[in-house]
Each structure stands twice: as C-alpha cells, then as structure tokens.
Image (cartoon, rainbow, N blue to C red; front, side):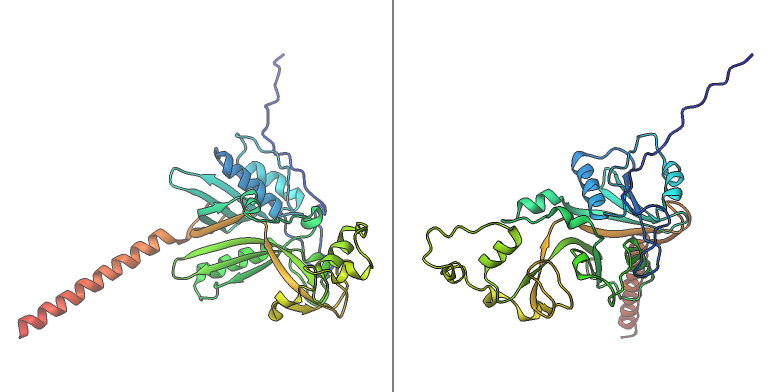
Length: 330
C-alpha cells in the first residue's frame, strides 16, 4: 500500500498585540486598522533595523514579532492576515538602485510603491539628541497622523492621502482622551521635488509657570535633597531653576480640557513639545498598482516624467519651427 507523505507547508507565525480580530474602536465605532510589516528579498542590516523601527511605529495594532521565512510569499501572509483582521501590508525591499517601501491595502489593493531616497534609524535620531526621550508606555496607543502639502488635486496624491489616513485608527476630537495622544506622524509633500518627508515625534506637555525642579520632583517621585538649603522655599526659588515660561512660545501653548498626568491639570495652560523619535525617511511615490502588488498600473512617476519631457521637447521644436518661419518671411 502506497504511503502519502504530507508536504511541508510554508507558514507565517504572527504575534499580534491586542485587540484581536474584529476589534472595533469604542470611540468611533469603526474597525481598527492593523498591519503586517515584513520584507521581500534579502535586506542589509540597516534596512532590517528600519523594518523593526516601522513595526514599533505601527504599534499597538501590528505584529511586532512577526515570524517570516525566505520561502514565504505574499499569499502566505494573506492567509494569516485574514483571520487576524489585518488591513494593510508594509513591505520593504532592496534593489541595486535603491530601497523601496510598498504600502498595500488587503486583500484587493491598491498598492503604493515608494522609493526611499534617504532614511535615519530611530537609534541614529536618539544619538543625535542631548536628552533622548522614549518612555516605556509611549507605544501603548497609535500615533496621530498629519498630512501637509497633499492637496494639489492630483489623483495619485489623493490616493496616497487616503492610504495614509486609513493606516491608523480614526479619532473623534470630541471624545478622544488627551492622555492617549503621545505620538504623531508627520508627512509633508514638496511639490517642487515630489518628495515626502516622513517624521515620527513624541508629544509632551509641560505646564507653564512651573519651575523645572518642581516638575522634575512631581514626575520622578523622588525625595529632593534639602540638606544644603536653609528653607524649603529655596528649593523652588533657587537661582537657575526658576520658571521656564520665559522661553515658551505662546502659540505653542494650550488650555487643557482634562487632566493629563500628575502636573498637567484641567483648565491650566501647558506648552506642547515635539521630540523626534524616528525613524526618519524621505520618500518618493514612484508607482501605484490597482491590486495588491499586482494589476494595472494607475500611476507611474517615471512614465509621467518621460511624457512630460517629451511634451516639453515637442513644444521646443514647435517654437523653433515658428521662429524659422518668421525668419523666412522676413
């Protein structure tokens, strides 16, 4: 009797953070978007670290410890993504020319392909700062997203805007808790260079008219050293540790509607501080496919540039012909 051996099947082992499949935002009533961040092909060490930085950026609704193997293909990830409620793929790849980032909506697309012209890892950003800040609870909530310069009316930029907006959960400004707004992703499109500046910041509130020493005492829960002071008031009024309000920009202050932390209280004025935490990228949208990494090409930047250059060349030829005709008439 013949024996049938089970074929070894490829699989992807995801480790998703809560909430699980079918989770719905209790504030907006909408399905929470979730993502897989993985690579196709061999990546050098810096791009592998960029992949981990992107996974951390997409927390908490992503698979931080997604297990992938060389033989896995897009179909393998799709088979796992459906039951897990995943809505988007972020795919890193590398060619001889440059690294690329593909952002696709599953299961039917579209897929946006970005050329990564420049990038800096989160560790590089931290090393460039005198006092890097990354508290452990910073990634418990998804980041806010702000888009700038995308309102040019061009169809491919409209698709990019919709894609970026739908990667992260929507918020209701009337019901959102300020304490959950701890990160922000900023994307700025430059219509002259056609490049997108991708930045990731932490949001920090500092009370105005409160000394640095008092703020540090309240936030760190540490007993101050008063041995060399004559009076406890010296701890507050000691030279060099006065109020920081002199250096605060009035335009960057807000009146809080609710309590945020131990020293930022409702109805008090606080300064909004942004500190970059990375990763940082400069992206160029080069292609949009109708399906998931396949299908008709909706937009191709290289073809668009070629057509534009051809049209400009034809216009120059027409202008030269008109000049020649004018010379002949004279």
